[in-house]
Length: 374
Ligand code: GMT
Image 1 (cartoon, rainbow, N blue to C red):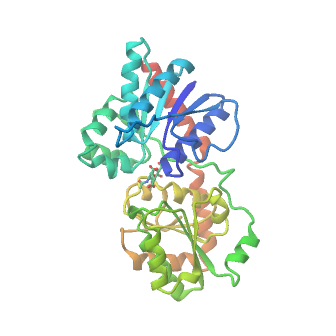
Image 2 (cartoon, helix red, strand yellow):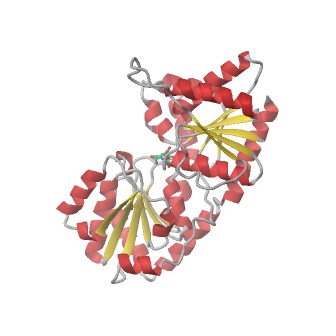
């Protein structure tokens, strides 16, 4: 198939899923064309079937807000025509689904019917999409898509609850490449970070308020009172300065490392003992899946789709959002040497359920079914 993928090119979950999907499809022989405003962060290898088309927005003094959606729709029209695409797959509804709708209408006037699939990832539904500034457009463009997928049952349910959706939404969960995400021997790194064999807790996120990074720090501060431990924080975002201040106030700063955005997060996960995801909202929790693939158990909230991934008492523990003390007790239980290896093995076994080889074919089958319906 000739597939156009539209996504955010950033480290965020939807961009990562879109890029990894495109890479896997290219390896399987499909021609994959990424259409976005800059080179996707994870588009880091060469394959003769992978193409990248940059959306260029000309500047003009009149534009207080550059009209990205229009430039994107025009680029989609151009690439569908020139590359003779069979399908467009847009990741994250805003503004990709509505731009795809516009491109589809334009192409129709040229006698071309291009099927469009929209994948809902999370905050496009649970947060931003619900805002009155976007809701009518989000509802319309989901209903106008030829196929719709969501990354968890929870996100599917929430979409139906909040929006007037007439389309079937197929659940296709996030997936993980277990060749890339696997526990590697990084003894030198572990020794450097925890010279006295302290336990290593890790959190990775975009440091937005929905991630509740302050809970991560509170959990760590309490675990540290009972057990020598260190905290590694990967990623960056608006909450980071506040979190650095909090660590100083709690006088734990010397045991916390802010590592910023990292390309090879699997190297950090390879030395970790426990992953913390206390999110307020989380439609799936790709970062937790990446940790589990590296044999790291997860302490999480029960937000959104996380319980569909993290099995309570097996791969980690699931608690109500904000239940910091419960999360501390559960963290101490997992970190006990009598339990840790069991949880690590269970985490890896669960990650295997989301192996690329199991999930990517679901997208291929879905593409074929939507193309056949046209
Ligand atoms: O986690 C984020 O804030 C980034 C966001 C995105 O859309 O880029 O991630 C969402 O999509 C991921 C991939 O499908 C999911 O694994 C994340 O759970 C989801 N994030 C939220 O729902 C907050």
